[in-house]
Image (cartoon, rainbow, N blue to C red; front, side):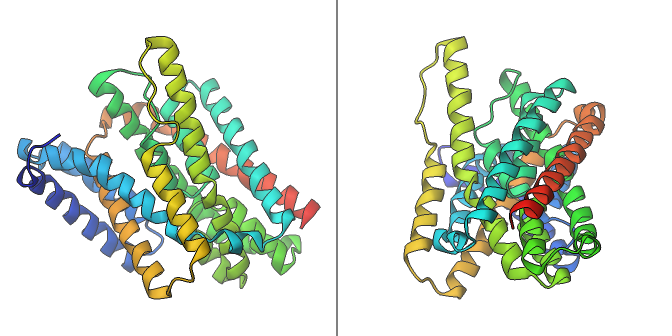
Length: 336
């Protein structure tokens, strides 16, 4: 770790500029995810040699500490009593859709000979909440390769997973409200389906506005986001046990500290009636921090690897999105 704050400043400043540009573009063109833009900018900065050796400590700090801080703050979005008000049927839709999507995506990804990080991050982004979920899971996923190549493998996987959820989530937000009308879904069914199948929270808000079911859609979506912490904890535990069996290394904490922090934030939001200005402000800060972290992750992307595996990874994202949409729709028709 760097020995002083001054060592961090060049890299932090560079990632901060990338985050500000990405955030600004997203506000002008909401369909463009700030996190996807940040990954692209980070990749450009690396491959045009804008990242000097003096910036490396700050970039690494952003990719780890800033990332985990952003995930912790995401917990303040979630209120368990609000999610519970959905009733049992939407909660079953959420749980079954996530379970089927997760296992189907990881199984098919293996059959397509994609790396472990690509399979896990694509499944997480599709099943939970898009780029933010990819960011959270990338902090615990273990690469198939060792050393610097291993870290690069996770960065590559995150880049393609974020591109995938951005692309197919955008298609879904434009297509699904229309499809719900064609299928004759009720307002409640439409809201639950949109919330259970579309990737990003922002995409769900947009689709909910189109279909006039924003409240139900967003609460259903937040029900999915609640599952980020247990899923990250389970995957992290599984991967640590696997590493211990193969290498004999000592296991760290069962629940990563940043996941515990996420859960603490969820409990705070569930117990206390916090003012909107506070929760909204914290949510914006979390988005900015995660956007900066995605820029740092983009700085580790290897263009040659993306070129060789990107098509298959995006293909897996398309299959995963289709499975999530199909399973959730069948469950909504049967239960809601």
